[in-house]
Length: 249
Image 1 (cartoon, rainbow, N blue to C red):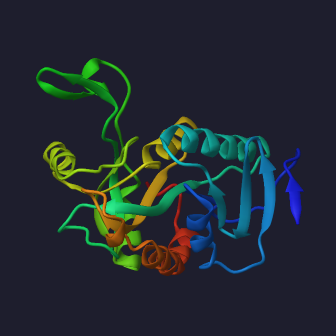
Image 2 (cartoon, rainbow, N blue to C red; image 1 turned 45 degrees about the horizontal axis):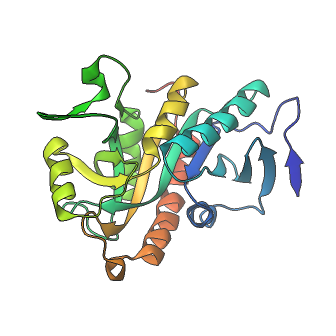
């Protein structure tokens, strides 16, 4: 069934959560952990999948800009309908920094950081904050990070957002030198977090590692296993989301 976005309230749940992935395969992996047949709601440029309370699912697109745009559209529609989201979750597969985040592991962000938003100088990379404007890091609610880690067994650390996926050992080493606590890199988390922050909504990022960060070796990718890990993770995470108090930040 297709539901058009209209005026009036949407179905209310105790804690409404928007789950944003990059691509439909990731969205579907999350949906497999939820019950219910699901519905679709067409938003400007994107389609929202209402798989089950408390989660609505959105394949927001690849990269921080498109992810931010799509998530902002969903948040705006929900707010204007009178039933806003209490939380946004950025999720999907990711590259993991070896040996700390091996293929198949789950990584949970206590910091969501834009790794390449800034300027190259003769003295090295400067984040945009050192240029005098903007932000490069968002921090999810500490209580929710703790509860999520306990429920899923995820490793906790920094998840980097990059606009260009790392393809060399030198670049991987450079990222770790700049961000020693980094466990994974993906392409959407910071964009999702920027959209959430603009709407005053907290954000969480959890990733399943499908490949090591470094030289591109498709034979080493385990996308199917990572998607399965994502399904398992959300099976454990959904009760946490249902019971989480959005005012406990």
